[in-house]
Length: 315
Image: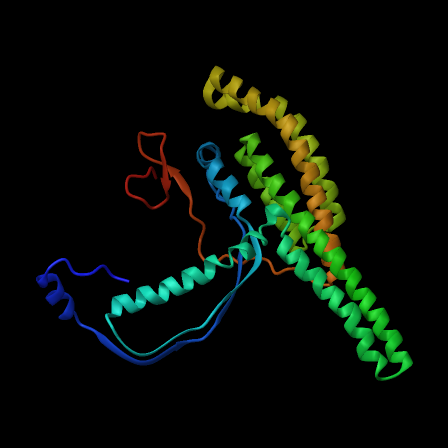
């Protein structure tokens, strides 16, 4: 609703505005399935740029980890109008308001699909599907024959068990994965973050087995944590002298506490995800890159970073 005109000139100007005549406009209902997984912003960056990016963008990445979504279902109602004479801009704003309000009323679906919360909406939906099959399959078989009823009982029981195990596995894996991602940032180690992400991609793509990948994550967590106490001070001293030595020493001490915890969390996530995939009989599709990665590079005569290709970058 617009405010009434303040003067006759305003009223005249409003009356003379171009308008469109809509005989009938019907927008059908829309069903959306939204998923979001934070990308690794440190991939393929230089060491110095990667270390700076860890310090500068850790808070932003932590928030993106908490915002990870898995199959959030949104159903937007239809919109219709008949015999309308309106300004095009006003009609567009009315349509936009309709869809915004429809999305806000289903905000609980988005929150219920957050991996950091265990995806409670997806968990309930998955188990609900299993319960439905548990009752529906025997009922469908009982009208055919006793043997069909027995097969229906077996199929329904198997479906319910798979739904419970698969739903709980996905829920637990989402929480441990989010926790591991955020805890790993406390290490402040770009090289460690890149190597960890590569190992996880290899496991999800099938290049590394689930059991082997889970054991490797735990072993590497402890190994890299202990090794960092000795390697980080040396690497820091080579780059920045005495200041770099103490900085590396601090990183090593933090890493020896953080990296084993991350390794255990990654191992648990890999194992639980593997159980869920085995029960459901399918592996979720791996995300495919649609555009080249954005790279951070240092600006000339500055410690500031910018996206590669921007004006004034060092070549």
